[in-house]
Image (tube, rainbow, N blue to C red; front, side, top):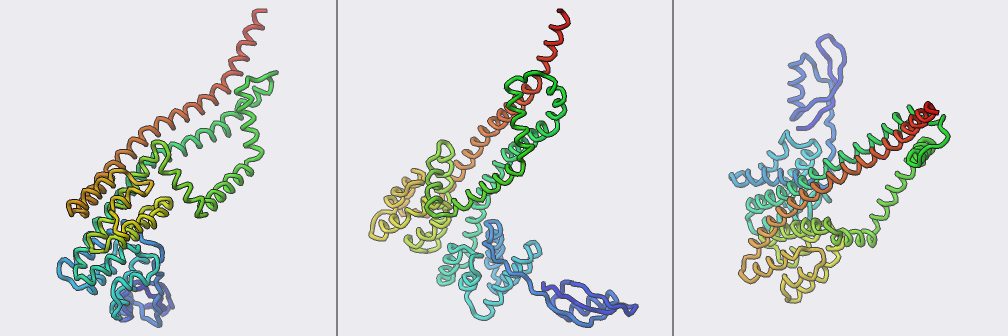
Length: 401
């Protein structure tokens, strides 16, 4: 529903202005009249159009609602109009769906209208919509996409939620150390200044504390500069490829990343292949959903193998970074003529494996971080208590002389 900026006169003759939602100026006039306000002028505020790529959850909701309406026999234009007026979506998203609706009413196909929105909709989704429009099975394709993006959202959410507690522990370590160094240690400074010599842990701790107190701005500046430098380096193509290659070959974590990347590719390829997209085109589109530049770089050679008449299993096996399970599943699917089913099955298995692997990784990470925090706090407490016990021993020795 559009938003209007208006000027009006109230019952006491005072000029008022404001903004409100209304279907048109006639409805705006009636709404103000009920409030004993009389419209002078009104201008429709331009809604900001969504330009960022939609997240998997938003794409899943869009496909699910559109598929349910199309399956119930609602026309595409009317279904899109209903989706655009959904109050649960963000205003910018609603404006974007409304723009799609206006383009369709001008005779533009839905897939072409989605493509004109820039990077809002992923290429895979646009390709599948275009194929479904030609085949006349848009409702089935939209339902498949809803299932696909729901799975993708759940996997991403599982990974993010699993690392939430380690992040909390990391922040807690920083806070505890800051409190001990910034508040607890200064309480003993006057006592320690009377001593001739401090133990080594205490001297180390006080050196760190003095450096942090005197050069805190350099620490902050260095941290910011390091973060910017890392971000700039990661944006360089050659560096990003090397980092992504290291990611899939890291001990323990590398296996987890290989499983996640393989599950993404298998799920995307299955969705494209089931929609009638040729396997070569499906591979070229599916590579963009992986999220690893090292694996994506190898796809040109893999696509060439399939394009020249080679087996899909050989092409997939030549790619470094995928789980070996994918090769066997593709081979069996190609031999039995059930490639779509096998890809869906291996995607489900790998997503389950990734969830279990993430759970195991977090179960190892949590005690490691707790032990690290205990070590840091223990070192600080030892550095504080050693000179205190030393002074008590000195006083006791002098009392017996």
